[in-house]
Image (cartoon, rainbow, N blue to C red; front, side, top):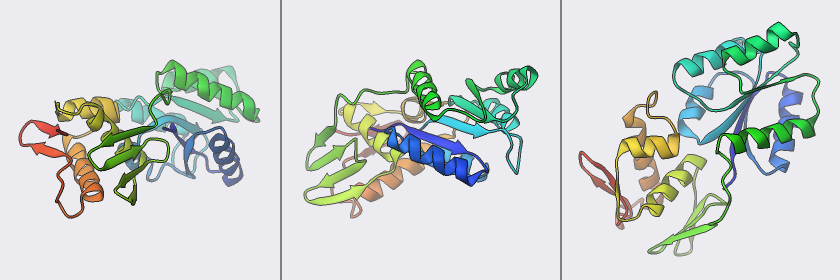
Length: 226
């Protein structure tokens, strides 16, 4: 399954360049020109790395990362910036950056730094299993699709990860704390209702007529694939 990277840069040319090269390097990329809607993406998607420019139209990038850190969102961050003095770089790390790259930058160096941070944070996953089957359902982890008989359903990154965790723990009741830790990687700042909403959306996709009950809700406890 491809790792997902979120980029925030108000320079559309740089954003497009980053999106193209990181996609070519094998990552899924979400690009934003400002921080608007970023918080929603962090809650709804399985983001493994944030790349953020400091000079943004709505907020200084380092302060935005500081705000995320205050909400216990600890997704690794690479700051990109033309601010290159020792004091400015130090400030970036103090505010919560895991790495700091000054502009102009070498694209291959940035990709190597991306790989190093993902590996160091334990986020890069070896694709040892490409498909998981359960009853008449087949989950393709690389394509983020579920095939039920001959019908193909497209899932988001988060839905793919959620279904994968449920299937790999078949026969076990998984509570919301477990899912927050293993799917969202956050048990503090994300509300339990987020899990309920995500499960409901996943169920509607894979069982729209409520006939097969792949995922059972154990009231007051959690969720079960049996």
